[in-house]
Length: 209
Image (cartoon, rainbow, N blue to C red):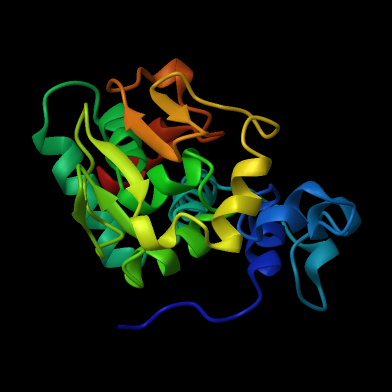
């Protein structure tokens, strides 16, 4: 499958905001946004003289897609599913993305970034309700218990990530027991408690054309 293998910090600079793709680096003074908050490239500082509605909508979509590190087809499939579900389409879209297993592992503090969480899942280091799952896109359900497998609980990357749990903010729809190294998806979140700096209505407008 095709995937982006270039510098992650360029994606943050392109979107003009922190997408938290590099783990600890995003919280340090080495963050590219703090140093060069303009698009990459030779003419990066001279861009954006004109901002059309389409450009604004496209950038919002790209921002969200890159935040969760999805390909265009994957992202569009989530949009199609969000339209099918009852409720507000934009909120449904964000909720589906939040319910991905790699995002849950990241939110629960088991990994410093979604990319690291995805790699750990692919290498069979996590289980859901006692069953090993190696699919990053697996949709977690309310009440599901997520934890590292018994052999993986002492992995350095997991232990180091858990030490920082809470210092970067937590979400109310997830309950984490750091001592037991396990987390539970407590409830489906409302829009106002999902810490996603996105205007999802612009994405809906873009796909609705």
